[in-house]
Image 1 (cartoon, rainbow, N blue to C red):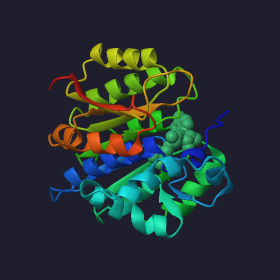
Image 2 (image 1 turned 90 degrees about the horizontal axis):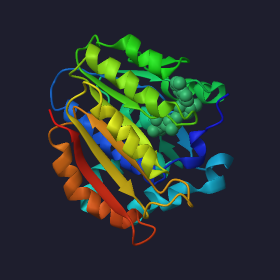
Image 3 (image 1 turned 135 degrees about the vertical axis):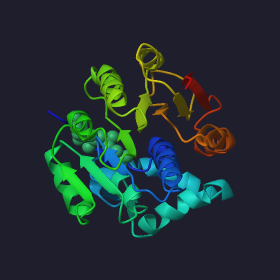
Image 4 (image 1 turned 30 degrees about the vertical axis):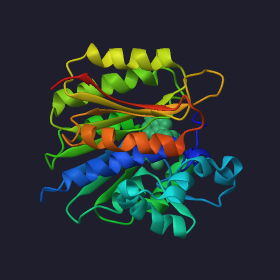
Length: 275
Ligand SMILES: C[S@@+](CC[C@H](N)C(=O)[O-])C[C@H]1O[C@@H](n2cnc3c(N)ncnc32)[C@H](O)[C@@H]1O
């Protein structure tokens, strides 16, 4: 039984980090005039209404994207410019709508979502183009069934809510299998920082696979504590754009200072496994 609904968390600090990195990866792939396949294993509703009761309940965007928008630093202008048209229409793009806003006619999206109501919203919001395929199927199986990608270039976002504790193992198993089938694909794995030992164990699981070229990007809005729920989030990126680590080192200090909730806020850019 799935109970997580992303509507409650739209535009929070974790969405900002995840979507900024996702957008940088899309832009990097689009430097080449060759199409790519975007696979979103846990797509959510695709697009969110900021005035929805669920989103209004916690208003997490106020401590996320709203803060970035209020400061509007030059380094994040091209990210803000993508979100702004949605924001001005009182919406916030989930990963599917964000990527769709950048897609060229020849690129393709595969979106997987299991929650029945969320899936219906995803279909309504994102199944408009021939290049977008929406599936009510587990994204773990779905993404593996698509690899190696027909277009020979693939960007894969794996963004579970970790409602099931075994997801911390499943994500690594699925990436290891996917990597074996398509070692050139870029995989983006999102994770929440709630318990530090869980994240240390997640990183270690990658070290025990054959996966190479793994980098980590983390932003914590306060110091680690288990008393507050999610205090930060991160992305583990396999085959990142070669530009990403430098870009993150240049920009995450500022993003962290904008999103921080206390003086323990910090960020991490780290190579977990070299090429
Ligand atoms: C964190 S949300 C996704 C947010 C979205 N990627 C974004 O950035 O806008 C996770 C979603 O995964 C869905 N989900 C949970 N288990 C799934 C599975 N095995 N396959 C596909 N979707 C799943 C949940 O219903 C939820 O909508």
